[in-house]
Image (cartoon, rainbow, N blue to C red; front, side, top):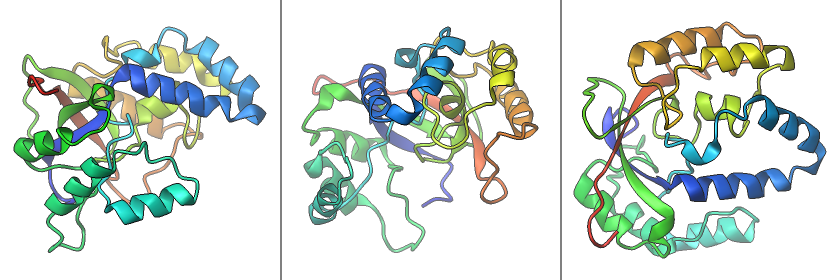
Length: 227
């Protein structure tokens, strides 16, 4: 359910995410100059280091639905067996079920085991309340719960909605200077500070509904031999 506060996502590994990002940017010829400009301004933030939630989480879907989207030109990265199994696992008794969030680690591993290209993916644990920082914690992202949107990624890696204004590039770099090696915030307090700064800017994406943007703790999940 979208009201859940803890669960698991299957996301692209940083290298695969970075490669897909470069491929997507190559198709945006009309924005090539702006993209190069931003890459130069934010060169200290390397996309292949990002381990947040915006790495195209695997979305559940019956094979027939995925194929229809593919015929319409949407790139679903294949993975039909894993998506179909994910769709079977989802509890659809609640109309507000979530197509990205997996509630149990055992189910996440089951779905992962059906991936056609498992070396491209990893499981991460996410939570938006009752934060518990531990050895597996990668950091804190800011974005839409269980979705593929991150304010951090949108600002400095792959603009999806509203990139920062040119005159604010240097300021953004300073504001994000506390990001760790995974391009995430090490402390929720630092993430809260950046979210307040972001909301103060005219170019910022506004919450589509109150509380749509939240802090998300991201933890690594140990791989099994099958992964």
